Image 1 (cartoon, rainbow, N blue to C red):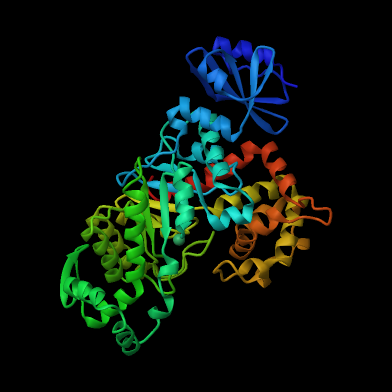
Image 2 (cartoon, rainbow, N blue to C red):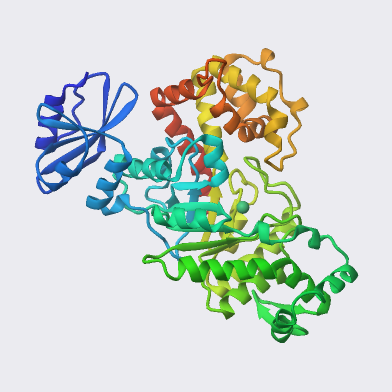
Length: 498
Ligand SMILES: [Zn+2]
């Protein structure tokens, strides 16, 4: 057990660099004071606590157990709210459109300290809390826990430059309301259910017929605004002849109505700034420049201001691996998408943005450094890489389980994984596990898409097969995990010009 008297003395003296005993880790960067209260985060037997000494409102507000002259406080939701009340920097915030941001989805709730060490001092701000409803379901977490984990990480690291919280790919109003009520500062509206993907592939003749069934008021609105008109944007001319207009109205008009509705109902009336992102990336074909313009123009004509827009780019942005496609063509389209975002005043957002090493420098260049980029699964892969290095047996068991459940996981994701190309486990030495699998696309995707299955897997007695061992290993190896993130996400920042 920790020597709490020694910790209390160190806290009172403001000298928390002392190591009081071998089984306790003190996070010196967390040392904070408010009035007569001193506070520090420690880890004891793989569990983190706040240790408070002194007296006053902050001391009283924290829930915990009094042991001698300290109060030992769990990293509970209630204590996170107390930290929020006394230390502003632990509250998530919006960033607006003038600084680059990176979404660092942390499905495990333990990656944020490494992420903070990665971005600290760089010209970019982290969206540490970023989860979709699907990720919550697959990991068995909720939105309170997601912000709690991020806020405690910020406190642990003493990181005062601000962080955001993104309700990612939200589709339904109840989830939007919940996320905003819980303090989320960014909202990524996923309009995919309002976008009819069958229209994208239909012929002009079929669409012309379908268009006539739309209410006349809608047709008149769009025809007055766009038909046979040309606009100058992103240094190019964007025109709408009848077939182009019909196509865009049929694909996007419902989605546009929904964006406006969400903005009017939730964003405009929020009592604080919200970074409102529009995602139109979940379509079956790349977003044409005129479609990007059409959506943005409709929003801005009606006074809807957004923080960022995520179009679907040409080529493939698959999870956890590099860009697949024609880089020259990508560059041409990126120039227009980035130019449009610039003209309207929002940021271009890049989804599935992890590991796109061959196009990061282009993204940095054409957005002039004003972008939002989302990463998520790659952070889980770095956790798995760490486990592969330090606990080969655990990695082998997870790998085999993932292979056995690959088809099940594939239902949720668009990936081109060829599992026959994954090197068989029995010919790889323990020392080579991490490099063999975490540097190879097919194995990366296998592990990437099976995270939910692996974390939720239970034996016949209802005990987790991997979850507890996985978390324990990462807690014991937290410096190694941090180093992995610093190196991997750091490479993203460098190539993006940050
Ligand atoms: Zn997306």
